[in-house]
Image 1 (tube, rainbow, N blue to C red):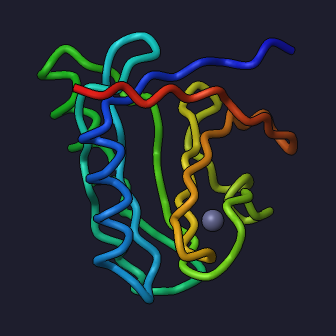
Image 2 (cartoon, rainbow, N blue to C red; image 1 turned 30 degrees about the vertical axis):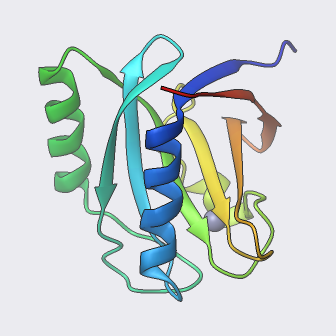
Image 3 (cartoon, rainbow, N blue to C red; image 1 turned 90 degrees about the vertical axis):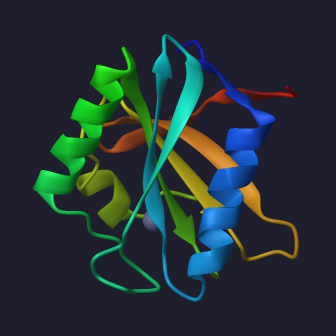
Length: 137
Ligand SMILES: [Zn+2]
């Protein structure tokens, strides 16, 4: 299957990595919205579980965020979460609880000194990495 390509401005990419860093040692999460394959807004959310292995956001918060993005004429393109001390690979739990197949999963890992960011397309019990281009503004 053809790999999908995503474009994200450098400033939003950095903001996401920074949000995750501030939340350490817990997992952080948030949403990215935009048009087609280009990210235009970031929505940092609260991990309601304060855990280093899981994240949880209530349905109400998810719906409000979708609405706020829609109000700007944008769609939710991805949900991001962090892995404070493990590889940037989706866990079984991540895949099982992924909201929607049309929404990408972004994982930011702080396992190494330099954070790693990976984008995935989730298809039932299978996932595929996406190409990401970081656009300097
Ligand atoms: Zn995870």
